[in-house]
Length: 206
Length: 322
Image 1 (cartoon, rainbow over the protein chains, first blue to last red):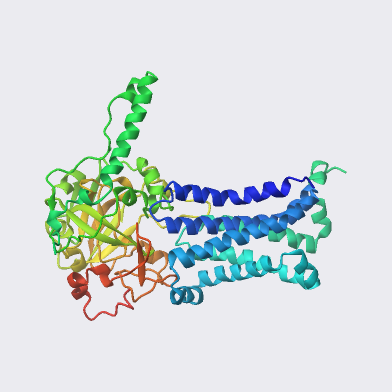
Image 2: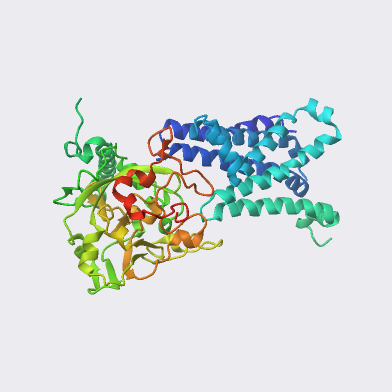
């Protein structure tokens, strides 16, 4: 593995956060900064979560197997932005009004599914260390399949909160469907999935 | 203790509008200077700091109606808009405002009236003396602003039309023209809303002196993103009742449809009075964020206009008629 790949990814992962700080510093968060921060961190959490789900398909299609070594960091960045997103909701939006926060989580389906996704990501982040992987053994993989649930919950969270225009959540939904669809393909037709690589696509006549 | 009366405080004194305009002026000057250096005479020609016209002979609205709360800045009022005809994001309407030309403009007044008429926007501006109305605006999304509208009572227009006894409701219709309203072009996921945008009021609501037709804000002609050239303002109702860029006002005998109710009947009703007791199914209406403030504030029944309008709904179950 190229030695600079991980540090580079770390910096790339912080870029959205840096942009947010820059916009905050320049008073460029619009008329409703709290709303802007909420949307910004939520969007990035979802984008990065979907990126982490793209690692396996990309690895198989491109044959670049070292990608797998980046997956943990991508997942942790998704958790980072999801945490910022929830903190914005809890601190900036509701300012520690716990009865109101609890009511939102229990009563509002879009908050419930979003919170579910956060709980899952928290569990996955907490078990992401090498020691935990060793300790959990087989159960680690089972636990981490929950990332699919988190991603579906994340997209539903977005879909359920928009008022009428579903364009943006629908786009995330399509990407998620492709990523999950690829896994079904691996499961049901491994031969077909195996043929779906850059190499075989470049020379299909063989 | 000295409490300033509404009349003592001019709208412009409270806000950062001057600053905002100065910045624009500065930018215009800077562009002009740059263009002059580059030898581009057309761009260097003096241009107004603000594209919008001042409205002359503006009088103050009734002091009992005008709030003395701190105004939101012109920048906030014109850059944070829900006007799906010009795009679904809050900043889209300001960006797409350039497409919405508002001259010439006509408004058809028709239906159950003795005097149907097609008004030009120039006629509309002369229906009654224009006055400043400083109102709270509570959006159904749980944020609010204080806005110095310029307009006249809707009742003045209604009286001119002379409604018949059959006129029980007033229906309002927005322009449909995807060229001037790019948000009306459907995306591959369909249309954001059904066009035209329609709204309605019960006759007694429409006649209430708080209900106005607005043609301006901050003493100037209404910017496109705020619903130019004329829009409805009913401050005790959620903002979406304030239909924008009106081309038709029709008097009818039955409750007319309204766009958000067509979209999501369980979430948006016909009346849509601001009511902290009746939550939106997906979020609370008990509190709101005033744009420019950090902490949420409590939402008031009828957006704080209960004293004036609560009697309109006497005996009605407002949980049912939300």
